[in-house]
Length: 430
Image (tube, rainbow, N blue to C red; front, top):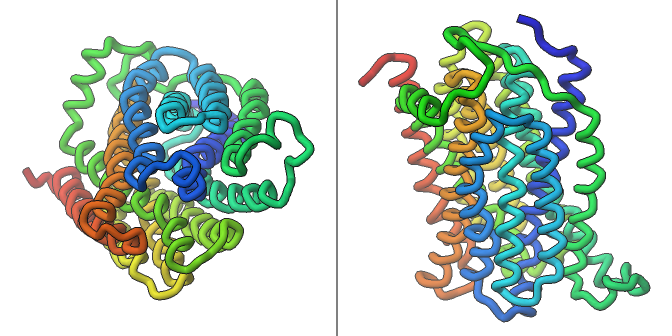
C-alpha cells in the first residue's frame, strides 16, 4: 500500500493544525471577554456560559454528524475550506452583535463552520499517514486545537489591552466599537489567508482496509450498522473523551474569570500566565501522548492505546483541584497539569478510534466523538460550572470551587470508562 510523500503529508498536516488552532482561538477568546460582555449586554454568568458553550456546542454537535457523513462522501478539502469561510464570517458578526440573541446566533454559525474541520481533517490524516505514524500525526493536529485555547487568551489579552490604549483610534468602522468587539472583528481576518493556503493541498486517495472492497462511500445505514458493530470499543472512548472535556472546558472557560475576580489580574497578565501554561501543557500532552502510544503500539499492538488512555486520565485527577489554589500560579499550574494529561488522553483515544473503524466510516466516527466532546464538554462543562456557581454558591468569587465540583467526578468517570474499554477490547471481558 503506497502513501503520499512525507513532505506532502506534513505540509497538509501543518495546515490542518493551523486551522485547528485558529478555530479554537475564535471559539475560546470569549473566555477572556466575559466581564466586558456581561457589562455591556447586562447578562449573567449563566447567559455568558450559553454563549461560550451551548450556542456553540449544540449546533457544532448536531451539524457535525451530517458533516462527518459529508466528509466520507465528498472531497474533504472542500468541506474544510467552506467551514473556515463560514466560521470566519460568523466571528466577524460576533463583533457587531448588539444583543444577547444576536451574539448567540452568530456563535451558532461559528459552530457550524468549525464542525466541518475535525471529521474531514482526521479522515484525511488517516490517508496521509501509515498506522504506525498515525498517533503522532493525530497528536500534531490536536496540538493545534489545544494551542488555540492558549493563543486565544494570550493574543486576545494583548489585543484587548492595545485597543484599550488606542490601537484603532484612527480606523473607521473599528474606532466606534467597544474593545471586546474589536478583538472579535480582528480574530476573523486570518481565516481569509488560511482558505488560500488550503488551495495548495490535494485530496489524498482513500486507502482500503482489510475486508473493504471499495473506497466509495457506503449507504448511511450500512455505515451506522458498522459503527454499532464496534460499539463495545467505541463507546468507552467516546464517553471517556467527553467527560475529560467536561473538565477541560469547565476550567478553561472560567479560570480567566477566576484570575480576574479573585486575584485582580488584568487581561494582559491573564493572557501571559494562563495562555503560556495552556500552550506548554497541551503541547507536551498531545504530542507526547501520541508519540508514546505509537512506540508502544509497535511492541504491543494498537489495543494498548486503551490502557494508555486510562493511565493518563488517572494522572489528570489532581489538576481538578486547580480552582482551589491559593495563588494565581497554583491555579494555572494545576490546570496546566490537567490539560497536559487530558490532551494526551484525547490524542490516544482519537487514534484508537482510527484504528478501530475502517476508512469509509472515519468521518462519521470522528463526528460522533466531536458530538460528545462538544455537548458534554463545551456545552455541559461550561454551563454546569456557571450553574453551580449561580445557584449553589451565589458568589462570583466561588467559581474555583464550582470548577472542582464539576471536573473531579467527570475525571473519575472518564478513568473508569477507559478501564472498561481496555478490559472489553483487550481482555475480552463481557
